[in-house]
Length: 458
Image (tube, rainbow, N blue to C red; front, side, top):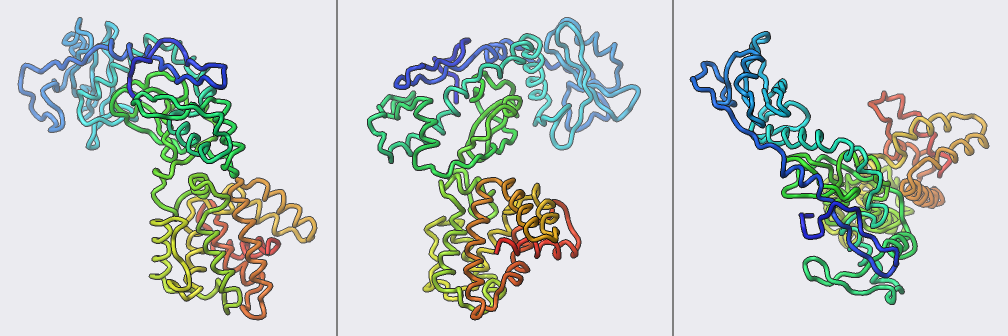
């Protein structure tokens, strides 16, 4: 997102007419302030300083007092020097002139320069970013505190990415009459999507599995001007100006990220693999009810393996299981795991178990682990099932549906116990540590707690 002619001090321009969607108007006030911020002015030491750290330049003035630094910087806004502390030799300070006073910051270096969380390649960049932040926070503290009170997010969802995704989904529905063509900033045709139509698309169209998912925000450095897709304000600074959702690409201020709803719509282009991917992220990215690995493997197992002796207990060749994993990571639901490619059904069961083991958050989540264990220990069968049912309701929707589908499958496995010798207890031993893991490292005794917890499901 870059600065354009639709930058304005006003808020988002969103029509109440469901057929007249208008793009947001980005608020440029903070951008203007960044342009006005003082520029850094390096004050070079007139003498050669002995024992100057190799990662500092001639702005280093050696061991001098605060008072001396203040005299050197007096009257030059944005001027800065580096000095070594008189009281603590070996400790370094950035002395910076701002607001007609000299500010002193303890300076660190670990391969990059920093005084806080942000790390910079050069002192010049550190000072530039610092001056921008100081200036904006001084001039617009009240404005910043109110940035989240009238977000554009409530009107347009989040950004172009979601609009385009919903547009593609709408093109496959019966709502063709409600769509019209407009021209984007790049003069390419896009569909006119209003907030009303967009929200309806997410809940009523082919996205039947609209599981709630929080955004996966990570600190991000934006190249060039960027605006927050929650509040429409400029994201100031040189680096780490905000956060980006690594699953859908939403860009917002760090403070705005606290207010963004749990409505992440993962983009397949950002999902690099199938295995080791968060379960909810995967199903939302593929718009499926369950992970395609689970559906594909169970379909194959039920087609040709229910009577196989030691099903799920007997291991397939590790290298072949890894081949299946790579096939899913590479080809997704088009991965070929048929008997002509993998005649040994134990390879498919191994791939399914590996998928569950590789999940960053187990099917039975860390938050519910202890509750499942306690529920399974209840001696009264009716009370035990009721307690387990209550815990099941705490699972995220995608986790619940995956577990439900798997248990239906495992029940089918037990119906062929005479041929495969796999009863509920045997399956509990196999799947206990696969489906549920304690939040922290556990002792061997914990494995004994897992097994009975799965019996009521099978």
